[in-house]
Length: 465
Ligand code: ARG
Image 1 (spheres, rainbow, N blue to C red):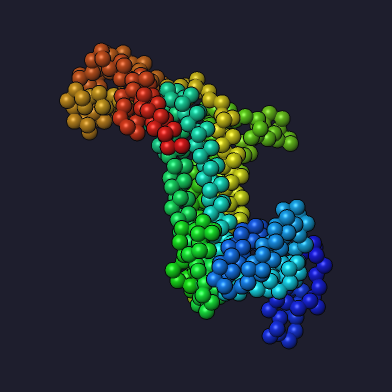
Image 2 (image 1 turned 60 degrees about the vertical axis):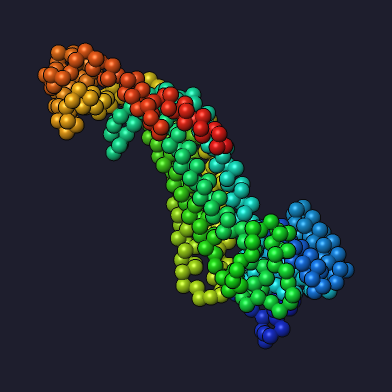
């Protein structure tokens, strides 16, 4: 750290039992203040709740609490104004703040750590921070969902080819296609909400690992900090980071969904497909090829998905061989966690806006539909309704498609007389079946792509926001 002069001769908070100071390299290697200072305001919040509990229980004097509260107010101001002098000598965010508190208010500052350890302190800080982070990401997901719905509504009846194996399969509406991403985001939010329940439990009181001999009131601290309850087992409370892993797994899925949409946007924007255009603010040009407009933002989102997946593996690996209870390994939980949250939040913020910058080209979508025999299934279903078993209908239509391919035309280009060569069951009423509009309208059940169903799905989805 550069903010405060490092002073190797200054005694460490825990230096009483040591004969020699750690080397500069070890100091850097073991310090976390570079990154965990991000937890500072949550650390102060946790400390204040702990101090209030200590005073209520008569473990510290009211005057000590008053001194701690005023000192912490000063420190919070210093941090918010960027004036706090962080020091590598004090290892982490917790010791930095405690040391400053003691400098400001004397012995009361030294009493704050009564009945507590950095082990339950850091676990509490992370949970407080993560709870806020989950709420912020949930709000971003909601914004993204809302913008998806607006675009889906505008295109509830815009036909496009639905694909399987990236081959034209059956007609869908663009609105219906977008609603698939709405559903993914709905589940992403549900996963975060579920994870939040397990995050929102208080570790404080576990102290180093075994609990504490002071007459503490953990329920009071939990209420003060808005936790739903207290962690039941002290060893578990200080050691497990499964809640961070769960959060990162939920984020990996959020990124996976963003990455799937990215892949589609990139494909749709390719001049070979040309289904959409993306607003210029999400694209960049090429330094050599003047004609290029590259979808950099979706490409980066696709790339950053790998980074979040990596964080998930890092955290799982961090945890897997740790014996109970706390081990310093756990200090390594923060950077993956912070970077996951930042990456997901930025991606969602951008995607909410990106969705509003999609310009749809319905003519290109319609042209692609005319080339892929997208209504072949509809013709088979038509024959089934006339009494033919489905497998026979499938065969008859397959022959019709082969003939159309040989002639270089669509099924709809055959006359009824020509179609009857494939099945005598075909009559004049087949014409509406072979149209895209007919195909769409026929899928008129819940979850289907009929424009009326898409409108209804949008209305239901809006209710949930
Ligand atoms: N900086 C540490 C961490 O992030 C705080 C807990 C340290 N506890 C200890 N006994 N060394 O996990």
